[in-house]
Each structure stands twice: as structure tokens, then as C-alpha cells.
Amino acid sequence: MTDIQVPVLIVGGGGCGLTTSIALSNLGIKSLLIE
Image (cartoon, rainbow, N blue to C red):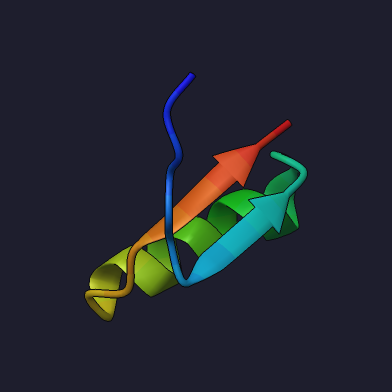
């Protein structure tokens, strides 16, 4: 198993989670989205 380090963890892939993930990506902030 490997460790993944990101500044933001988003829990839930619904409308809010996906929108947050896209917004952070557009700002250059790495995130991890889990369902």
C-alpha cells in the first residue's frame, strides 16, 4: 500500500464534490475525490 498526500480530501462525488474538485483544479490545488 502506498501513501497519497494531498492538501484537500473531498468525500462524495455528487454535484458539490465534483464542482469543488473542478474549482480546486482550476486554481492549481491538488485534491483527491473519493466516493
